[in-house]
Amino acid sequence: MFDKQLLSIPGVKKLIAKLSVLAVVQSIAIILEAVFLSQAMVLTWEQKKIAALTIPVLSFFVAFALRYLITRIENQITDKFASQASSQLKEQLLQKEFELGPAMVSNIGSGHMVTLALEGIDKVENYLNLILQKTINLAVIPWIILIYSFFVNWLSAVVMLLVFPVIILFMVILGLAAQAKSDRQYSGFKEMSNNFIDSMRGLKTLKLFGLSKRYGDNIYRVSENYRKSTMSVLKVALLSTFALDFFTTMSIAIVAVLLGVKLINGTVTLLPALIILILCPDYFLPVRDYGNDYHATLDGKNAMTDIHHILDLPSPTSQIKLHGFKNWTADSTLKVSDLNFSYDQKEDNISDANFNLKGFVNVGIVGRSGSGKSTLLNLLGGWLSPTNENGHLPFEVNGQKIDSLAQPEWQKHISYIPQDPYIFAGTIAQNIAFYKPDADMDAINAAIEKAGLERFVNSLPDKAATKIGEGGRGISGGQAQRIALARTLLDTQRTILLLDEPTAHLDIETEYQLKQTMVPIFKDHLVIFATHRLHWMNEMDYILVMEDGKIVEQGTQSELTKQNGAYKRLISEIRGDDNA
Image (cartoon, rainbow, N blue to C red; front, side, top):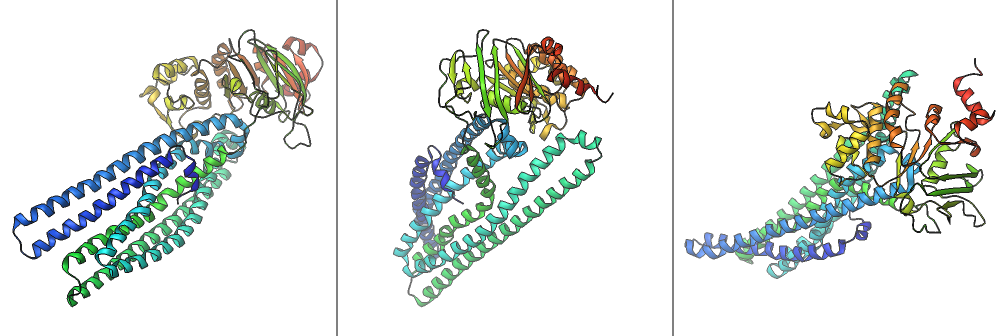
């Protein structure tokens, strides 16, 4: 249950030291509890006066209060640490997601990615909250109690010591079985998340082609598999809880019988026998707590493993640092010369791309599906690094030549809108502030107004506090895109807009309405818009036409329309002139 990757969390060693000291003090408080309570019981058995009970009883309550005060302190410091660590982990995950870009999200699955960033982080927080405190208590408290027990009655202490490894052995066996089943359950959960989100996104298309029932059956199958794996985990959890309770109860019973026989034989007095008998449940309590919480932390452990796996993925890097780039302005320039990129090192996906951009211009990238539009956009966003050889530097920003746009100075000025922005379960305000969670409501409302969401939001009873469902349930595709647009508008310092077919799944009427909102926002921005819907080219100052990873034509729309080339053929193909 305790994963060594926990030790890489900043501040965890300091927390372990604090918890260890508190566990030692708590162990002493537990022993004092047992001693004073036993003294009070012996005095009562001997029918002493009430005055004789005052000191033992008051001392017992002081030790009792100290014990639970320490528990409260442990809970508070672990809560604070878990909250801070999970927040930092979320920031790192979102930063890594932006560094790796859309390709990584596509490979992992946007449903699972957002589930990790939301539910997964909550599970990690719960894992950190439980695992550290339970592990330290298990490592400290039983052994201090055992050492004291040897001084009180060595034979009972030997029995306690011999039984402890048996309980640990059964915990390990059942824990391994639970881990295997939990791994299958977690895999099923990821599959279910991605299947559900993909099906929801393509529901209109599936219904159009009469495939919705087939995919509905697929969702049912995946959810049933997840239900069965969950029930398997619960069975093992119940079995392990029963085994722990059984063995600890049997152990306490053995010690009680042993002490009872010794009391009858007169080889032990009542006071030490009571002390051992009262300490025995507390001796086994940490291992029971550890075992009971093992299953509650498995999902958190799996989520943290997944998050660290993503964080360990190599990010695109640049060997030459971009200096002095403050923001994209009216005088900024970007020169791309002989840009090449290949996914498999065998066939170029982008080959010898050349173009120049200056100032606030709207640039359209058009071409058939698979022509390389998204790949070029990912290169310009710095989410992919060029595969140019012989030290060639394909980018030049404001006169400075660099090998890649995977530069923090460049990327922090980028806003990106994909064709499938993810909407998670939560309020509209939370969705808009997803990448800037510290934004106040004034800034969120301003973004809502600019994105054309004001009328829709004001029509809702709870305004921006209205909750929407996972994957955008309860809102239309156009509203989902406006929420994504509001996300980008929330940070007014970003002046580079990258759009990857943001209206691909919208009907013409919704797209037209969204277009009226988006076009005014293009002002004072460098806009690079990849799409196969050519009516957007009327809003573009410059157009790049792509075929098979190459820029085969470029220029203004009027220039390209006059040529009888690739752009003209693309227009004819989309209009269906050949079919006519």
